Image (cartoon, rainbow, N blue to C red; front, side, top):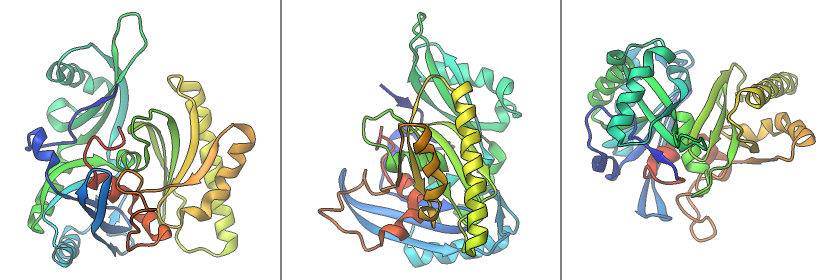
Length: 327
């Protein structure tokens, strides 16, 4: 059993989160969106699109020029006919911690976590927005373990104003690692995976169990077009960071064994070599993600987008799915 609280919601009741919407990913690199039509596991790609952003407009999730981003976002919204959206939050803007909580109603668990916020993150409860995933813990007391993601309230409120100014109606927010996990996790599976999310100028390294994010870090190595020598150096740097994360998880994890390494993001196949050495030391598979597996079967429906291009939509694809997908 796995239970999740709603995303970083400011206003909608839970049933509002299930209404038709697009997944909107606003990253340092680009604005991208995915929207589906059709029923669960029999969907089709209704809308997709990407607008590259100039370097420096957004840096580590911080918007450096809100007027410029608002102009580009408004153009993007009009060209793709977007309205209701669920929106990504970069991992750099969130804090993640794990804690034990008593069994009980969600409201009581939320209150329990709220009391613990200041012990774990540099934010007071009034200044924070959070969501949590519950994982049954095998303890004698029957306690549950919660993994909690926290974002500054002011950050979300600024984005809400920006999105509404562009004519959008934001339903919820979610950290990018969880969105990728939802798009790529097998339904009902709670296997622990190492996700490598390659972006233009940085790479996210996430450890997830099912759709629960256990660990997230970012390294300044990206997949932007590079000459062979620079790419070789980037691969070596990423391999070193993967080793560091693996070592950390082995000594600080909660017993979950990493079963596979999953690559996502534009140009991520170029970094497959960075993960190859892991297979020599651990019984792991290394593969490039299938971001459609919880939306449709590509043997029955072929989307109008190449496999390689789809990797850049991993976050948006997860946001576009219903909250329970992949759980």
